[in-house]
Length: 255
Image (cartoon, rainbow, N blue to C red; front, side, top):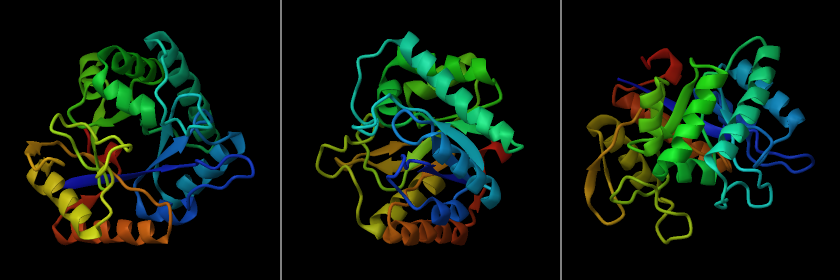
């Protein structure tokens, strides 16, 4: 059994530093790099690509809505055509940095509100999948397990990695509990590790209401904002490996 570990990186902007990219990268197999819309800028993009290449992590574009102030987490009333253009623009930009570094993109993972809205909106999901396919049909889409985004990717013939979250609680429809609601974040490390092992080994997750639902796990999103988060990611890696799970970049095992 194999699983990918991914993390959202390259989210600093100008003089503002966010995250601990240099410490997170050795712990993950796939790097989702911000493309300048919700976070990041050209210099940060280049630096993060270079760090990822040095660490051996596979590269991914992390496109979001043009909302630096809201960090891309606020819903925007945008058309599927606009989302298509935003994704092509951002994926194209990071793809150029990857090419300049002598490599290519493995995947694309939409960010924040774009990710969550597309998970439930077939038209947005199809626009994102089409944008990625048109840029490079070999790129993998990282999408919320069981979502409309997964269906859109499969429909168009795009490879898709079903994504699960280590530190987020789930609703009965398989969606993530909104961050604005109590219990959205799982702060207890043991509970989070137990959730990860259940999703990977048993293919199921216990929702916030207590109901057990099926879930497919190809890649796990982990966060590295702070020393405690780094230690937590190390614990997740250890727990998976102790249970016979090999940690590898999604592109090495997805068909």
